[in-house]
Amino acid sequence: MNKKITFPELVDAVATITNTSKRTSETFLKEFFATITEALTRGENVKIKNFGVFKLVEVGERKSVNVNTGEEMQIPSHVKVSFTPDKSLADAINTPFASFETVVLSEDLSEDDLRKLSSYDKIETEIVEKSSEESLDNEEIVVPPPFNPHKNDEGENFAGDEQASEGIVSDEQLKKDEAVVDGQSPVDESIDDAQGEKEESDEIGNESEHLVKSDSETIEKDVQTVEEQQKELEETDETDCKQCRYYKYSRYYRRYSRRKNFAKGFLCGSVTMLFIAGIAAYAYLLLTTDYVEPTSSERDNVEALVVNDVVKGSDTTIAVVDSVVKKVEETPVLRYDTISRSRFLTSMSRTYYGDYHFWVYIYEENKDFLENPNAIPPGTVVVIPPAEKYGINKNDPESLKAAIDKAAEIMKPYER
Amino acid sequence: MDNKALLDMVAERINRDAEDVNKLVDALISVVKTRCGELDSIAVPGFGTFETKKKLERVVVNPTTGKRMLIPPKIVLSFRPSALLKNKLR
Image 1 (cartoon, rainbow over the protein chains, first blue to last red):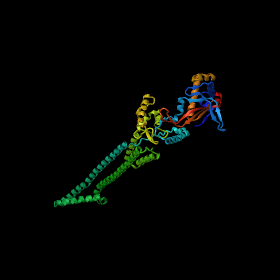
Image 2: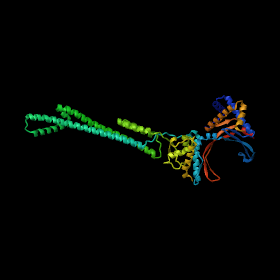
Image 3: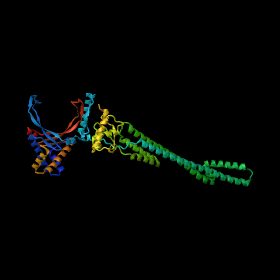
Image 4: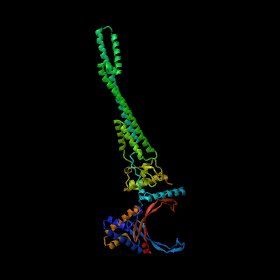
C-alpha cells in the first residue's frame, strides 16, 4: 500500500518466482532495462508482450513562466517517454474499480446534482485509497434462510393437530375411565349392599319390598356420600374402604393427571404458538420492511427463545420445536448481498458468477422490489440466485449473450 | 523494437536461452501486477518508476451526439522516467 519497492526487493521477488539465484535475476533485470533504455535512445519504441509499450513522444516548443521569477521562458522541443500498459496488466491493476461502467447521464441532471455526485465519489475514492481491502468489501452475508411463514403455518397446524388430537384422546380416555370407575364403584357396591340388605330383609320377612327398595336407595345415596367423603369412609367401613380407596385414588390420580395434562398441553400450546408467532412476525419483518439485516442480538434473542421454550416445555414441546427447527434448517441456504455505494449488481455478479453481465439475473430474482437498476438505494439487500437457476456460465458465450440481451430489455424502460 | 527482438537481445547479453529470459520477463510482469495491484510503486534505478495513479471519475460530452457520459474512476499504471533516462533521450 503506497510502498516504494526498491530494486533489491524487486530482484528478490523475481528470483523467488523463477527459482533462480539472486545474481541471475539481478543481471537479468539490469540488462533488461538497459536494453530498453538503449532502444529508446536509438529512437525506437519498445513493445513488451503482456506488459505494455514504451513510446517516444515528441513535445513541441512551448512558452512557459518561471514560477520563482515570473520570467517568461521558452521550453525547447524534446522527446518524452510515455508508457502505455497492456490491457491485461491495466485490467489487473484496475480490479478494485472494475465493476464501474460508463453511464450516460440524463439531460435533466443539473450541475448541482453533478457536483454533489462528484463530491460523494471523491469521498468514496478516498476511502478506497485508504485501504484496497475496502474496495473488496464483500458484504456477503450468508444469512440463514428467513423463517418461511408457509412452513411455519404447516408446523403450526401440525403442532396444533397433534396437540388437539392428543387432548381429545386423553380427555376421552379419561372420561371413559371415569365413567367406568364411577359406574363400577357405586353401582356394584349398591348392588352388593342392596343384596345384603335384601337377604337381611328376607330373613326378617317378606313384609315390605318397598322398604327394602327404599333402604337400598338410601344405602346407595349413603355410599355416594361416603364416596365423596373419603376419610370418613376409610375410618368407618373397611371392606368398602379398600375398593373405594382404590377407585378414589385412581380417580383422583386421573383427575389430577388430567389437570396436569391439560396444564401441560396448555403450556405447550401457548409456548409453541408464541414461538411460531414470534418467528412469523420475524419473518414478516424480514420480508417486508427494508430488509433489515438481523443483528446478532436479535438472532440471539430468537435462539434464547427457542432454548427457553425447550426448557419450559415438556417432551412433546421439545419434539414439536425440534420438528419446526429441523424444517427451518432443511430449507436451502440462500446468499444475500447488500447494495452499497461501491457495490452494485454488477460487482455482485462479478464476485458470484465471474462476469458483470450476469447482473440481470440478480435483478430478475429481486425485481419485485427493484425498479431502476441504475438507481437502487444503498442498503438494499438482494438475494443472489444460485448460478444453476438461470444457467449462468461465464465461459459459455451464448449464456453471456443471453444476459446482454436481457440487460438491454431491462434497461429499455429506463432509457431516455 | 518488438518483444522478440528485445528478448533475444537480452538473452544474448546475459548468455541465457530465450526460454529462460521469457520466464524471467513473465516473473517480472507478475511482480509488477501484484505489487502495483496493491497500489505500491516499483522503482528501477536509472530507468524510472512504475506507479499507480487514481483517476477520478469525470463527465465527458460526446462531441457527435452531445450526450454527457460519466466516466467511472479507475486506477492506472503509469511510468515516470528517471532523470537519467530523460537526459539520455535529450
